[in-house]
Image 1: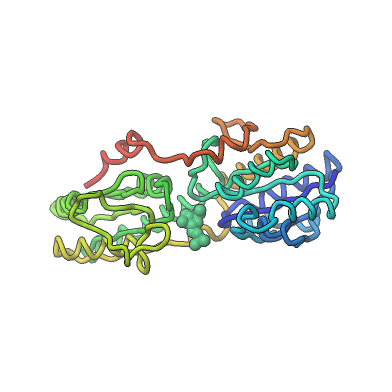
Image 2 (image 1 turned 90 degrees about the vertical axis):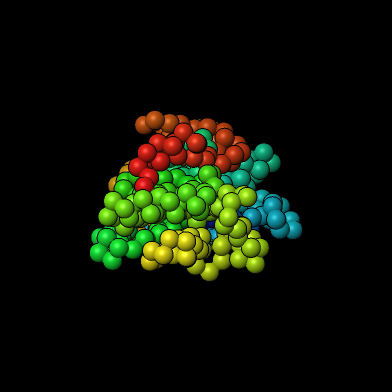
Length: 342
Ligand code: F6P
């Protein structure tokens, strides 16, 4: 059997670990041949392939990024996109496809599976917002990077009696902010799921200073002020996703705090640092196990499935379970962290 492999969407630590596991087990146990498709769905769309065998996978386990490259290309948004993919798969002699990606990439995989393409999905995103799986790989690495940053920022905040606002990734879900905020002992965590009231935030900042410590705020990039509150974002400030342009929401909150409390505040945007570099041991472990299970699913002809972590076991669930709805932080999970606010 000839199997195509692609990685789509934002890159994330652990992608190479999946590719390596798929290829090693696929070649050694199932005697498969592999075709690497470059740059996500653009690969099968434009016939961009690369050699993919055990040799190409040597030494990649600890490497961030993806040897296959990535893109956010969506064939369903392009003329004849699906037909072109089907044609190229046939031309390359590919019998099955392993798509490693997040909501968009696996959304395409779900639709292609419905159209009869033999596809298996592996979930990835640093945001951990894919449903159907307890965790996605890349998330643990991002949380560790953010936690280390918060640890470092505590000491400089305290030395200068300044507020430090750390903006982390998470467009729709606050998982990185919540986990890193708890692990790093943040004094306030703001997430997209729970719009904030800037007056409450400033009260917490002031009460924190009364106990002689400078506060650390961890803010998801998608955090928004509560409607009807006295902080508003003008449409000119926002991008297509409703996020603050330029310095982002972290910077905007830091400026509000300075104006309202008179305390000096600085914002730090961690951005793509959270996505780069070597994966943690947990992410390598999870990515490897997803890869092993995905190639077994292909061998079993179990298509239209996504790999999922359920407790400590790797399960195969219908692709639609991962792509139907985002997994968001619940009120209860957020309330748990609020005990430490202020
Ligand atoms: O989905 C992963 C993610 O890193 C989000 O947290 C973030 O909003 C987005 O990708 C950034 O996308 P890009 O790399 O295209 O700017």
